[in-house]
Amino acid sequence: MGKGRLKSGNAKLKGIRNKLKRVEVYQKLKKEGEATKRKERKARQKEAEALGEAAPKPPPQKTLDNTREVDDTIVQPDDDEVLGENSFDEFASHFSGERPPRIVVTTSCYPSAKLMDFLEVIVDLFPNCEYRKRGAVPIKEVVAAASKRDFTMLMVFTEKSKQVHGLWMIKLPEGPTARFKLTNVVMPKKLHGHGRKTGHRPELILNNFSTRLGHRVGRFLACLVPHDPQFKGRQVVTMHNQRDFIFFRHHRYVFEEKKAEGKKTEVGAYLQELGPRFTLKLKSLQLGSFDTQHGEYEWKHKPELDTSRRRFHL
Image 1 (tube, rainbow, N blue to C red):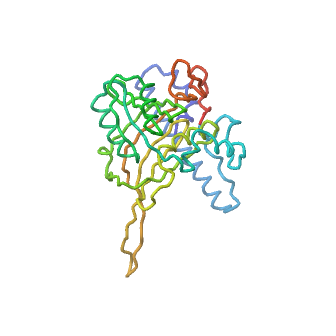
Image 2 (image 1 turned 90 degrees about the vertical axis):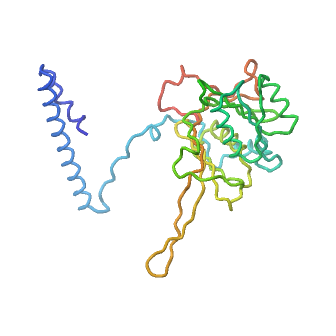
Image 3 (image 1 turned 45 degrees about the vertical axis):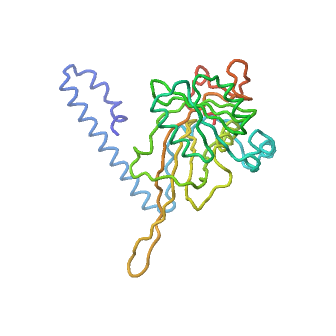
């Protein structure tokens, strides 16, 4: 609060060589700055109360989100070109119901016990999801085998220092392939008051995938969950994009009857988290199935070019 007020007093502080005295003057200037700021705030509040509805609204606080760089690839809801592409892209069969999701999950070579515990939660989370031990089999062979068995998605989880670190998602049989960095994993048992998943197909909420790339990644992620949810189970999978970080959450709606005054009862609603929690960061999106040597990249993260904190891709 008082830091802004101290700029004018920096000259006074620089001239004080004794550290104790300098700290004492610093604290005094800080308190004076805070007191002045409080007085100005109260004066503004009184002025706003006197003016009523005619009071000017305070300017919105600047954030990285509302000051982001202008992006020409923002998708509008009525964009005919995007709607046309949706009808024949790699994910169209999922949204039309022709190919419901059937997921196979595997790991990097020789996974740790922590990674296997995480995979157990993932397999239980997504409907029609199965685990297959990989061993030392190359990913290309796993892709070919999974395609022959009519799986629609291959998920390969990797680790670093025995911690879950990455995720490869491959849409079968013809791609695309996405690589994510996976961080901030919180297992269900570490969530306070967590619930237990039921066998119902969950509802999916995709939020803030606003650019052309984000729209495509959002449709890719949507292929993990059946397009016909069972609302009776009240389970919701949320993938929220914020500054190119995709936050994954899994909740259940809970309705409770509460006694009110007299004989009336009120119904309250709240969310119960089921878990797990984790965060995804897109590193690359490759056309076609897995091919790190000769694959054509639709988008690839280049840290040396992303020098602006206000530029977001999704």
